[in-house]
Length: 82
Image (cartoon, rainbow, N blue to C red; front, side, top):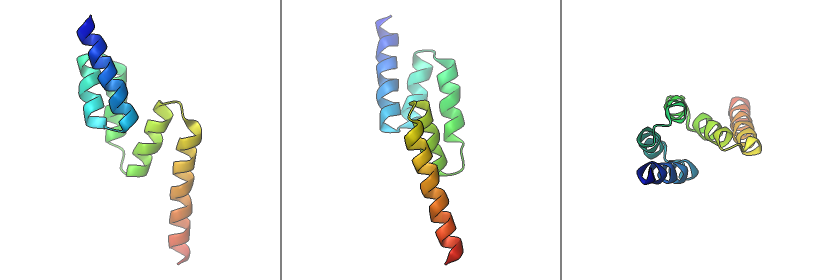
């Protein structure tokens, strides 16, 4: 039981730090299959910004996710004007 708790702590720290590879291993270690699958989903997203936004949503931080996506949209819009 203690081993699962340690894996869970590592997973939490890894998610907080944005370390998706470590989070993947830790979620596998504590047998949190749904969370492991979500980390795999996030890792396959095509852009860094989309991964950051999805990770923010995972952490229930909708405002941060929205800000990330709006910043990307603004950046893309400015580039297309220039």
